[in-house]
Length: 129
Image (tube, rainbow, N blue to C red):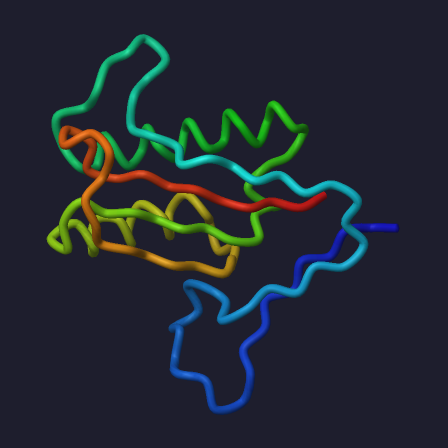
C-alpha cells in the first residue's frame, strides 16, 4: 500500500494561509519516525552566530535524520519548532516555508527557553512511510 499524507482543514477552522495543515491524515504507513529535537549544531561542532544560520542548520540536521531512515521532507507529518524568542518568528517562518517548498505538515511553534542558551531554535518532528 502507498503511504498517503493528506493535509486537512475542517470547515470553520481559523485561516492557515496555506503554509501548514490544521491536521494531517496518514494512511498506508508501515513505519513511523519520531525525530528528537534537532539542534543548531553542525557536524563539526560549530554554531552559527545568527538565527538564520542556526535555523538552516536545524533543517539540515532534520533532513540528515530523515535520510538515515530512507525518508525525505515529503514524509513529514508533524513539525514542532521551539524558538528562544518571539523576535525570531518571522525569520523562522521564512526559512520553514522555503525549506518545506509547499509541503503542508501539522505545525506547532512554541516560544520557550531552550536547553542551551546559545541555541536560538530547535525542531522535533514526526514522519511516516
